Image (tube, rainbow, N blue to C red):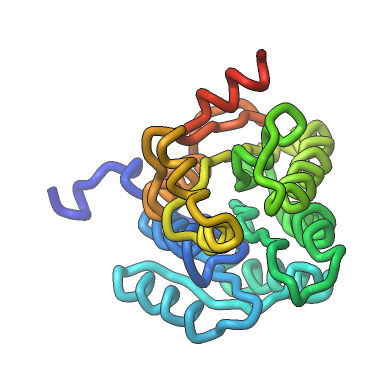
Length: 260
């Protein structure tokens, strides 16, 4: 089938613009590429590594898509607003906001960095992005089972502070769902297990050798970066109610413990 005859559903995001935070590598980078393949113009966000972000943009453009790289530290309200504005100024709208960036295991960013990034910055990015969104906009928040279920299921001590900060961020975002709904903007959470090849999984396995293998055995298998990104990208257009939580891979034991 040639492009001219292809149904419109092949490009469900044609004419729309997506901002993906933390998208110079890993899940964010693959999500950006997948959204571009669905027709979206994409803002690839990075904090420091411009060459990596520019490579993602080049790959999107080589595949026929549209993208720009925008440097923004999510803990800087000025940076965040400049990034959201760049989406509108460059592509004409802001329709999808993927809140993918997170962290907190870094030892050089200060004791309160996890909460500043995983709660305060997420709320600020949501507010800055949705200020520019119209009816039909979609926000996708990316988290982990270890954070989503932290109040019911213990996690590794090395990850507990990060998990608590991410859950605090999720709770703060969810509080804003009704107000967003009044404006026709929907909100979806995607929660995944530990992901093979991510920075967080690598750091955790370094802090607690064998942690990744133990989680792999418990879950049966762990998703790859690309597999999880596919689930995140799918939620940009999924026909689900606002406030929906999509549990991706290995959630059965978390659910059993949380309900037990």
